[in-house]
Amino acid sequence: MEYKEKTIFISGASRGIGHAIGLRLAREGANVVVTGKTAEPHPKLPGTIYTAAKDMEEAGGQALPIVMDVRFEDQVEHAVNQTVEYFGGIDVLINNASAIQLTGTLQTAMKRYDLMHTINTRGTFMLSQKCLPHLLKAENPHILNLSPPLNMEEKWFAPHVAYTMAKYGMSMCVLGMAGEFRDQGVAVNALWPKTTIATAAVNNLLGGEELMRRSRTPDIMGDAAFEILRRPSTASTGQFFIDEDVLREAGVTDFAKYRVDDSVDLMPDYFL
Image 1 (cartoon, rainbow, N blue to C red):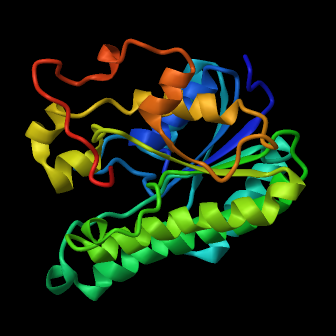
Image 2 (cartoon, rainbow, N blue to C red; image 1 turned 120 degrees about the vertical axis):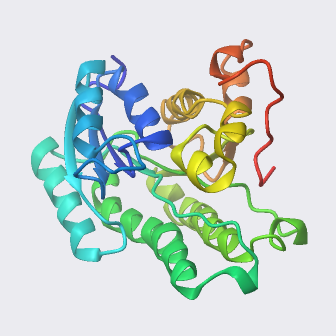
């Protein structure tokens, strides 16, 4: 129970990678704050903040479900204040909430551009800003952004420049905040998958059932996040981690358990 009495605040924890990270830390006894927009069952998306909170508690942790849209400052402030009032503080922030659309410049409606930038870049910055006063009081504080390594080569931008800009905004928060808060002991890192991950976004927006089969389960991201967050915050910051590399360093050699379908080749992630 390595995380007993530690409080983990996760944006977008109803399903997918956010849910997997929360579940992994709940198994270590963590208090998991499950935030997201889904309070009622969605016809195309599995799970709500309440079903996710129940999963966390059944796994061995404590859970606090809070309806929060990361685009709105008042909702973010309310969620952070409610967390501190309920659990007494915040030890870890997981910036997982994200919007995606892999379209070119002429195919990207400005409404969708605004959504990606408001959730991904602005949401990450704002939630970090609101949690930092509490993280600065924690024993081993971490911020972990689900965003890719920064690479200024044209090939990462040309196919979907709006999305790349929005995700790289999250990664630039890592670069800047790691340096800004290094001397105060807050670790700020990024985690990204080596392959596509079987999430609702992959199924509904990117590649359907075929891409799901060629993906790994979100559990690999949960296990990798756990290995990063257990490190001393003063010794590991400003890093852009890849899930498989983290787990290999931790001694994992068998990755078959993470495959959705071992009869097909894995699909490398778009940013690697």
